[in-house]
Amino acid sequence: MTETIGIELGARSYDVHIGPEALAIGVKRLQGCTRRFALVIDENVLACQSDRISQICLSLDVAGDPIVIPAGESAKTFRQLEALSSTLLSMELERGDAIIAVGGGVTGDLAGFAAAIYKRGIDVIQVPTTLLSMVDSSVGGKTAINMAQGKNLVGVFHQPARVIADTGFLKTLPRREILAGYAEILKAALIGDADLFVQLETAGANSVSGDRIPELIAGAVRFKAGIVAADERETGSRALLNLGHTFGHALESESGGKLLHGEAVAAGLALAFAYSVRCGFCPVEDATKVTRHLDDIGLEYRLARLHGAPYSAEAMLDRIRHDKKTSGGHLRLILARGIGDAFIHDQTDMADLLTFLKDKIQ
Image (cartoon, rainbow, N blue to C red):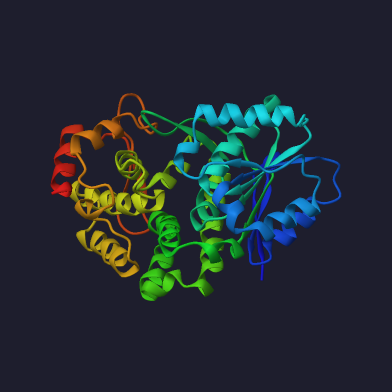
């Protein structure tokens, strides 16, 4: 069964199709229009999902061959953005045409950014192929590339015209990738859905079983849809979606590519709750529940055991200080008063944060 969830943004509203038949439904909705499509695809997805890619190419007016981009964060650069834009120009895409981005968050970010700036903006249809991108990056319109100073520091908001989250793509994903995506589902529960956390906690390791995945994706997308509709450009409450990400981005950058984004976020969630306890905002019992659940699922959060260890507290703090979530010279952290009760904290003491990170790295 496929579910359709609407993202309500006035003239920029769009549908998210979720389930094992989402690709067929989404492609059918795109048929019959006069526009041409450029297919931008992750090289790994092209190699293992040729039948699904053929379904897109045979059903729509796809311009030229698929534009293949490298897998991994190294593709999110100005160099790749320029190359992609040049290819789109050579295809003579017009402003009424669209890009179809097939892949994980890297593909969606790069193709979405290219769509936003190509001839001052064309549509992008997101076809996420990882659990992480289905529940997070494909919805909400954030597009960006990385810089030497950190992740996602240059980009724009550009809402997709449609999101097609076909869970059939997940069948080829290794468990490590599924767990990385699960971290973003857990994040939604920790931000503002204590009842969902209880369900996840009760299910334990079964939370990431195949039968539950479409339901969990839909729940996470509905949660994010409400926040995005209320604060599209992250001027207020949408910042809550960054729970775990300030710590996580620092870990991810310092890992040199050894940590997946979701793995870094999982560790970041544990750090956010631990620091909330340190600051006197959150009961220690709630932070313990978070780490216990991460243990049950199989997501590592202890800094000394993470891929890419050992980490430096000073290097992490430097990454955090250059994070785009700083405001008015003050560091903005998303902390928690408890499970399901995240809040924005704008007055973080840098010296205290450094001491905290040193304690956690040991």
